[in-house]
Length: 456
Ligand SMILES: NC(=O)c1ccc[n+]([C@@H]2O[C@H](COP(=O)([O-])OP(=O)(O)OC[C@H]3O[C@@H](n4cnc5c(N)ncnc54)[C@H](O)[C@@H]3O)[C@@H](O)[C@H]2O)c1
Image (cartoon, rainbow, N blue to C red; front, side):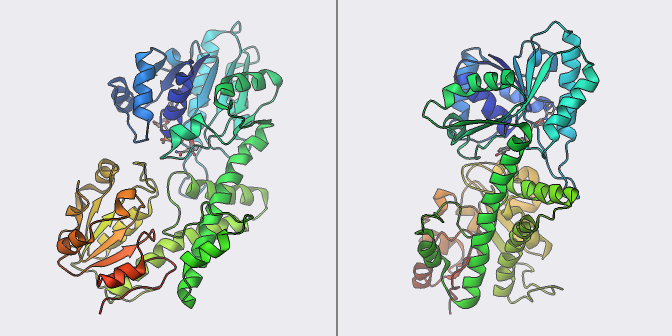
């Protein structure tokens, strides 16, 4: 098939690369000229395991192309995938301006091809509030008039950053929303190579398909806020969340996935998708109370963790603030990405904590295995972003572990001690270390849902 992706970000690029891998001819379109120039030089603009190799393989085979020219991308396309961003606006509502601009561009191109074209299927792949794909259809219809044939479908994406290529190639399920059998058949043909392992393609109406994505992300976000709430209760009553988690997760109805306490969720999806459910509820007069609580617990989790840092340095914790004792202190951060195996720092808890530290007169250093470039671009010269995890610790008064990258799991603690001038204070936002081991080494150690260790 001939395909085009509108938006060559995490979703558009991975989708384009993986669909070209099975023999489709794919054009990836973006308005960002620098990104397309980079891709045309053979450089992958994001870090995603396995993506760059696959990208080279398919561009070399002549079936993967990158362009800023919409007409070139779409003219021969059987299917056009809209993969642009759908961020929250300042009110927490989903901002659909990129979706509608993309729809207008597609409409103009359809119109220029005239009424005698084979109907293209316009697939909304971005995560969109329920009703948006049909609004896209109406918008295109209004722009092209009654005689230009086209179909609209919805196809939410479930890939996880850090494992995106694997997730796309071996999906747990493919969800497709359609209005008729023509679009359904095309979607089934497209995804057939990816579901030969027996995983299902669920074909349903467009509204339900849009909702599947929000229901899934909101459920996962709920699990994270739930375990964080339990961790906070553990702290208050002297229980250990690690043991509680073990005991609780042995129940097969509960399971052990996505139930890790920490700094709360970040990234470009869970925060905005939870807000989108709240907004959809408000619009319909059905208050999404659970989503509101999930969001609130998540935001507070960062504040609670920050309070531990403030309390350690003798500052006043809580509403109203007051001196935090951080003036002149240096805080080192291990991990800036919102989770391991990605360079995505959108809504990363580390950014919140780094900004709080700077705002309270501390200096900050940071190291991330792959997100350093993005961290430098986001934070500017106010933070010393270094290329060696131990160098970040030079002269630091405390280390904050903010992302659970593998290389942080068993560090050389002698080196840590040396770099921190003998007095080690660790705020572990990912519960990577054993409190007993920290105690033995004479460190001060704070984690989530477990008793703090205070060096004498
Ligand atoms: N990132 C994820 O892990 C993930 C997973 C599942 C679903 N999603 C959803 O997929 C959508 C895209 O997310 P993303 O993370 O890939 O976004 P992104 O910000 O990485 O990429 C979006 C791209 O679209 C481009 N763009 C914007 N307007 C355009 C236009 N009119 N024409 C061409 N290009 C245009 C931007 O320049 C950008 O490169 C969102 O709705 C998101 O919620 C994301």
